[in-house]
Amino acid sequence: MRKIRLDFFIVLMLSAVVLAYFFPQGANSTLIPLETVIRIGIMLIFFFYGLKLSFQDIKKDLNNTRLHLLIQLTTFLLFPLIVLITKPFVVHDDKEIIWLAFMFLAVLPSTVSSSVVMVSIAKGNVPAAIFNATISGLIGILVTPLWMGLFVSKSTAHYDWGPIYLKLVTEILAPVLVGLVLQHFFTFFHSFTKKYRKLFTRFDQTVILLIVYNSFASSFVSNIFGSIQLLDFLIIFNGSLLLFYVVYSFTGWIAHKMQFNRQDTITIQFSGTKKSLLHGSVFAEVIFGSSVSMGIILLPIMVFHALQLFIISIIATNKARIDKEASRLSDLKTPTDRVSG
Image (cartoon, rainbow, N blue to C red; front, side, top):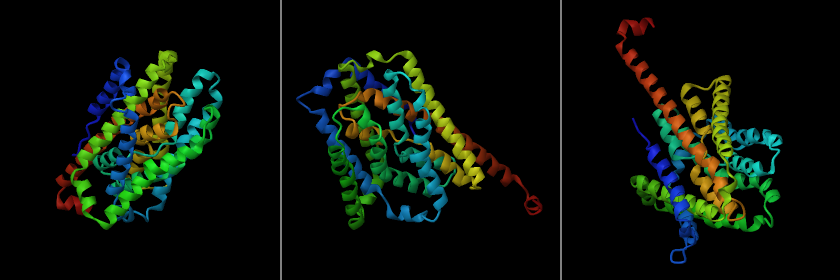
């Protein structure tokens, strides 16, 4: 059984926040401009992402249209609609930023690595998970800023979408395309990224940690969290938990109504409920910059990321155990039992 180390990276994220609290001056260092390092790191992440994309994996599961549509509609439509429904209940101005942070969480694409690993553990449709996680990341480059443009421009003064899309193209889309072209004409690039995928995962996580540190350091310097109370954190935690279970339950129900098999249902529920901390960190840096409290914007996706990994890992392990037990019982049947059954 494949395992994913969940707790260690969560501890590292929390450590980055603690480090930002005690040493916030590191974000403004002139010796090593952290903003420049992060920008280069973002470009490299998506360049490597392009190198890792496999056209064969994408083509493999193209015909399962209903499954793909359901997952993508869940990711980019169901999540935002659920958060939009709560907008009339936000009556205090100081809660507006929390709602905006949840909206940002809701419009993010799915994560790639953990979705595929968890689907694999639970014996779901792995090729479909690979396809949808890949497509979700590409769709998110366009859809996420379009969704946020409906709300951020109203909440942020002097907000100009021109430079934002320029950064999205130069820092995200262009590196992906360059990576795709290189791995298409030089196949050893794709083999190289597969061989050292753990190393590339560590690089992704390192950039995320730098973004988290930089975001929270800036927030601590500006005393952004001076207004965050325990009640606000409880709202974020419980809201993230409720959002996850609503989507997970709904996708399970609709998959049953649409008569998907067990493997596809697992993929729908696991891939449909995932939100990418990697994309969230990158998009927050590109879209929001220093115009709003980045620490608060990232807090719901950090909480949701930890919860989704913890809960899905338990569910996936339980499904794998049940599947293993069913296989064991099946193997214990005699040939006569199998014929009569």
